[in-house]
Length: 270
Image (cartoon, rainbow, N blue to C red):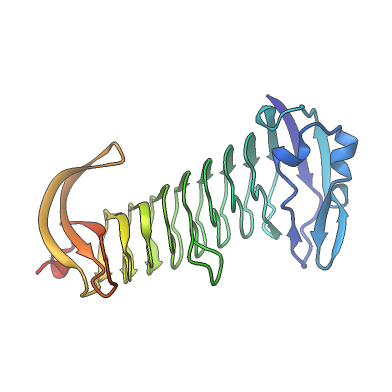
């Protein structure tokens, strides 16, 4: 696989918008041509080389390209947006919309990621080794279609309203999340390894949510279905005892499922 290395020169106060930083856009271009690819800086377009040193070797096909961003880009948005193939590795933190609308390929963020990571994600694999912000795997503001495919994994904590309007795919947060995970969820799988503050699955119609930690506040619109042991979700065995709920009955046609670990959650069982 050919590697193209981007070394950040400086992160300006005005955010960069780098939706053109994808293997799809780099494919078939020379390094000099890649240096001249345009990104947004405020309300103007500038060459990539104004903010990044570019070196390495390109390839004709996106599937043969690995982009390595060697450092923090915590004020650069939309890296990997819409990508269909290839790989991106960010060796640091990044800003909003990383991997949004991605259809294939692989992105690894070795630090933290901002809000809306994996927004409207349709395929591929997005891995965030640190923490993530609000609305990951969710829909664009005002839309009703969120993540529909692929796998999004966060090894740290995540924020509010993750998996909002989720339609499909798999979202795993190994740490804690804040309020309203899976709100308006219609399909897919959300697995939370840590705790949730409140309103898990609010107005969900479909899909499956698993919470291995403690849910501080649970919504009343869910029907208790009993206790299940060692549940299997998407071919993965999750050991332990889980309370099972169906809802949210505040929404017509509700068919979502929530599994909550029995340990620490006696207060939400009838």
